[in-house]
Amino acid sequence: MSIRTLIRGGLVVTASDEVHADVLIEDGRVAALAAHGSAAAGAWTADRTIDATGKYVIPGGVDAHTHMELPFGGTSASDTFETGTRAAAWGGTTTIVDFAVQSVGHSLREGLDRWYAKADGNCAVDYAFHMILSDVNERTLKEMDHLVGEGVTSFKLFMAYPGVFYSDDGQILRAMQRGAANGGLIMMHAENGIAIDVLVEQALARGETDPRHHGEVRKVLLEAEATHRAIQLARVAGAPLYVVHVSAEEAVAELAAARDKGLPVFGETCPQYLFLSTDNLEEPDFQGAKYVCSTPLRPKEHQAALWRGLRTNDLQVVSTDHCPFCFRGQKELGRGDFSKIPNGLPGVENRMDLLHQAVLDGHISRRRWIEIACASPARMFGLYPQKGTIAPGSDADIVLYDPHAEQVISAETHHMNVDYSAYEGRRITGRVDTVLSRGELVIDQREFTGRAGHGAFVPRSTCQYL
Image (cartoon, rainbow, N blue to C red; front, top):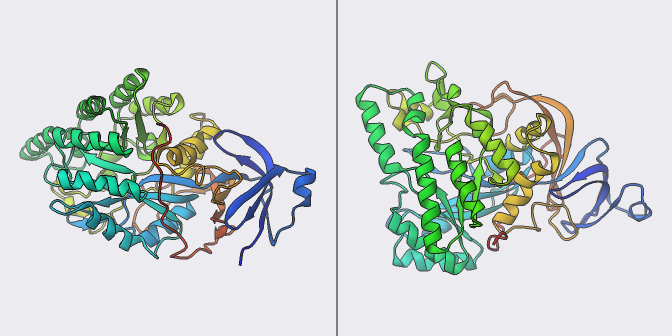
């Protein structure tokens, strides 16, 4: 039975507007908005009224880069689709786009079906998939067309991780050509993995085994070079390009130069690159292993360029690259050899809060917060306006956000299935109060009321920026 819900008295903030409005929800969708106190709003009746006085009413976050249950480095990411989507909800994210993985020698279909099976019936919020291409050949290129047809419209390739996910320039070009033809968006992990492997080998031979050396061998110039090369290959193919987890000033410069030419090139960064740095990798007693991810954390000086890129729209999206591994038993696999530390950080629960803190710190505006965390990822990956905004007809994925509540981020209180927080002890202002997913309460005044299986697979259209 459908429940009519009325959200009263809040400040509705979207990427384009800020307005004191009431929101009427019917059948899991936004039915109408009207100015608070207006005759129209006053005439509405509802089964359930939620008081949003003093709070922001914002679209649920869209995290376009997560890795739940990802096998990596002899272990697997510690969040399941159940624990990871529950944590996402606690953090005000109501849609994730996770990565299904094709294994070398196997079809895309097999990989995608494996991920459907992992997620189906287990998610607390809605989900979609990108496809990781690990083995580009004539058969898998044809399969790309079929995946676009069923709403999996983006494909990730790796210039890093030789022997695991790596594709050479010829394979990348072929995939880009196919994407140009079928409308699929190519996503790129841009690091020169062949050169990095040489530097890893040389560092280990010198006895440089600590976590900080992970950052030192994955050099800024090798991210910038790979970003440049990916852009040129995309130009040759006549294809759009989305570069994931951009961490370095020089890589941002490559994206900005391409965009200045009018090329359909897009970039994403992540909270870890905006708020953490190589200082964390250098923490003593192997604690730096907690912060090993790829691309790696950079010296603090790079943060200003990333914030500037977000303000100038040379970077369009902030995703998390949520890929958690516990410190005990997982990150510790790399004691004595940094190259064996599983790459990845937890963050799906922290993104919306950290970006709100960035508003308070003067890095971005309130509407830009919603743009980079909700609307732009939804548009980039063919989910808008179903997701990413509050408008008549949109899914009622809505967050009541308390901009004045103070919190201290800690593993003691987070809901991600991982034994540490990358932001342990950080004091921030702003906190999720209540979350609705398709009109159903998932978090009700800081109490989890959702359930595994509420979250549904969402087929996507193609990139809406093209």
